[in-house]
Every structure is written in structure tokens, then in C-alpha cells.
Image 1 (cartoon, rainbow, N blue to C red):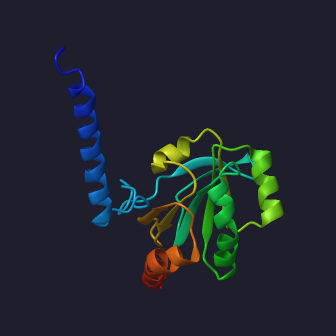
Image 2 (image 1 turned 90 degrees about the horizontal axis):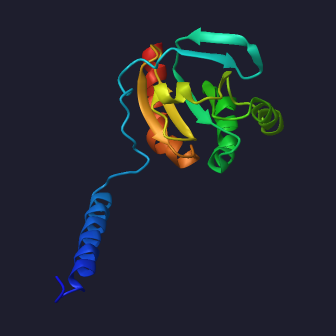
Length: 181
């Protein structure tokens, strides 16, 4: 090794380059980073034991029913702010959305909804992030689509935009609404 001190850094560089190329190839083959694995898809959404965002004294222990979206959001999340106007639009079109305020400050969250509008049929407060952990949340925003039986049909990580809605969630939403009838 003393004769070729440059070989170790060269070998490390080559290994790193190969690892990056493998990841790039994987992404080129259609892996979508917003398609996070979810153990919940195809299973009932867990029963959430939380307080209602507007009033800490009102507890909520029930299974959420759909068809509905469950949107995980926070005031500290700039992407959540970016998607909020579209969530208000969806709610105005009759899409039921439950909000899960994640690892946030209750007062800031209430002020946010007062200022930007409240698209949520029910807003729950998950200050310590434990409910998010039960859902397998990586961060905010994340949106789950649940059917009329409370079964998780889809999970989307990232901002819910008109394109994402039209291409990924709306077909599943319409299917869930059809099945509920």
C-alpha cells in the first residue's frame, strides 16, 4: 500500500460513482421518489386518538371514514403552504379532506387556517408526531386516500397539485366514490 497511496482514494471514488450511476439508472426506469412504500395501502387507516385542533379538550378516537383524503400538514412546512390553496379548491368541489396537523404549534396552526382558509372537514392535532408515526409519515405534506370503509388506497408524499390530483388521485377518488354508492 505504501507504494500506491493513490489507489485507496481512487477505489473509493469509483465505488461512489458506481453507486450513483445505479441510483440514476433506477430513477430512469420509473422509480418515483413520491411513491413511498406504505404498509397501510390495502389496510384500514389506524384509529387515531388525538385532540381536535380547535379545542384541546375535545378528544377524538375513531376510525376515519371515506371516501376522503387525509392530509398531513404543518405551518413550518413551505410545501404545505404551496398546496393549501388547491386543498381549499378541492374541498369547495366536495372532496372530503381530514387534516392532521403534524409536529406543530396548535396556536400557529389555528391562525394558519383562519388566515388561509380551512379545507378540512375535521382537523386533528398531532403535536408529538405519534399518530404520524402510526401512519408511517416521513414528513409533511403527505396525503392518503381512504375509501368508504376506511381502507387506505393510495399514499402520496409531496404537494398535492392539480396535475397530481388529475393523474394519480382523482381516478382513485372517483372509484372510491362509485364504490360507496
